[in-house]
Image 1 (cartoon, helix red, strand yellow):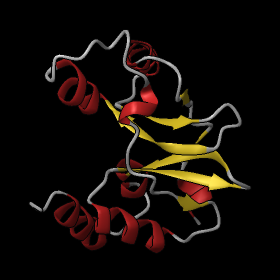
Image 2: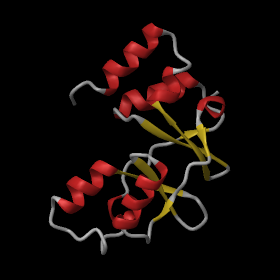
Image 3: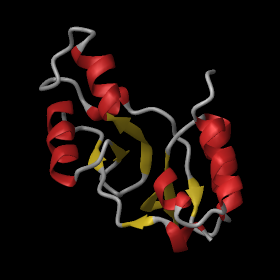
Image 4: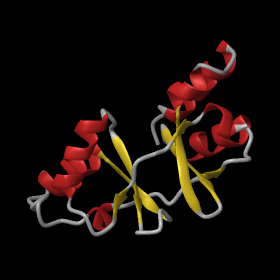
Length: 136
């Protein structure tokens, strides 16, 4: 099950917080993506370090004034009772490398390709990587 291989306790950034705060939090946690949640830890999307650079900084927007919720995208998640194959299918379908794990309408963790890599046989891992990184 996904719950058994995920990274528990995903730290959210609230939608009203700014992108400069999101970047600081990413640096503190050593992560490249943060779930964007409301104040009740309900998932609203995800924001990546790339989103901050491309969609904010390179677009001439001020990260101190742009809210995380403004760039939150990809409300794609998996339930904690999902199988690893179901998580793989979602990641492949959407060509994403990180997937929030939700239980009782709240985010409880994140699953990444690295988490899956530790639990997949080599042939399945190779297939996952080729699908996630395939050009769209």
